[in-house]
Image: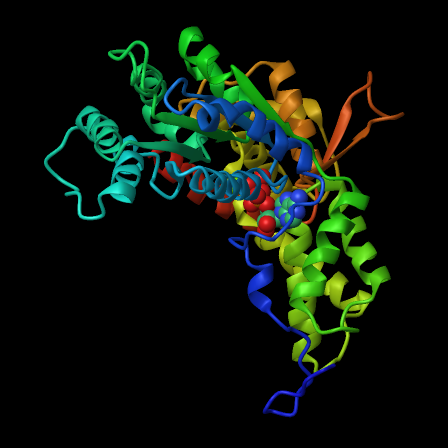
Amino acid sequence: MVWPSSYGRIRLFRDEEVLSLDYVPERLPHREKQLSELFSIFSPILEKPGSAARRVLITGNIGTGKTVTAKKFGELIQLEAQRRGLEFHYVHVNCRIQRGSFFHVLLKAVRHLKPSFPGRGFATHELLSALLDALDESDAYMILTLDDMEALVDKCGADPFYDLSRAHDDRTGGPYRLSLICILRDPDKLEKLDPATRSTLEEYVIHMPDYTKEQLFDILMDRVRLAFYEGAVREDVVEFIAEIAAPRGDARYAIELLWRAGKLAELEGQAEIMPEHVRRARAQVWPVEKDVLKALPLHAKLFLLAIARVFKFTDEAYISMGEAEDTYRMVCEELGQEPRKHTQVWKYVQDLAKLQLISTRPSGQGYRGRTTLISLYSIPAEELERELSTLLSKELEVEVN
Ligand code: ADP
Ligand code: MG
């Protein structure tokens, strides 16, 4: 049934909340395998509480369900622990939101057990002890998830992981109460850690592959049923959205397209989302998708800034890889960064193309030798430059003009 609102407009949305980023749906199509992997890794903790602690690393691109899968797992394991009469806490902390501060990450975990724990007067290592003591006191177990762990590595390097991996050292034989799930988009970040710390983190790795078009379709259909009134979104329109999002394999982008297309249709008083709404949603979503830029590794940002600068002043549709790299080296010099080697830069080019920030094609004839030609995808160069300058100023704590 389509329900008219008090303004006489047709309503499409039954429950818009279902399309928000934080929503954890009942089921997670195409992440069943990863969920059951998590269960088997953590099963000793339920079977023989205190006998072991686990450290798991979850990797994958943006929108591959890293966050939602971890949260779902947290919900489920907490229920199972409760059924077994265990005092068990799943705590999900986003390191980026905590500005990469290990202190604030730990404070969140401690406050989960002791809500009025003071935010001052403690050193970081004291907070870690306080956390373990609080777990001891209530004979409890915890899985602490460090989401967007990049932020923590960037700010604190290896120290937090070293400390966490040694947390139980003074109690051989247990009880081991604190386990970790680390969520990381860019595995290159691990290179910043020393080999010993790194290997403790890489003991169990779960990778979330990009979603295919068919998988995105399934994910979207679940949301359509919950978010919209019947008849508001045709299956072929859902398929269209899945197809647009497929090159990025990103469920976040797919769901955002669906939501925006719905808003556009609603605004026009339409009872149904049409392909044209999806196309307009796409045009709206892309240029402002700032999260994608923010999450890029530093040197991918620098390379993109270089390209934006070139395209600001040229009418050419494409520039050569060589020209792009020259400008990239200039940008690095200007900002006091050691330029990455060609093979690494080439990897960034491929990643940026995959994210549809740039597009690439072989040079073909007319160029001396073979090279790759690079074009800026859909963001105006000037806007991209402004956005990247702001991000880089913050990241490098220097003025970028
Ligand atoms: P990541 O943390 O990898 O960037 P998220 O977990 O935030 O990705 O997922 C992005 C969006 O897509 C969220 O709204 C999430 O609920 C949804 N999503 C991702 N994977 C699935 C899935 N398998 N089933 C249902 N929804 C999903
Ligand atoms: Mg996430």
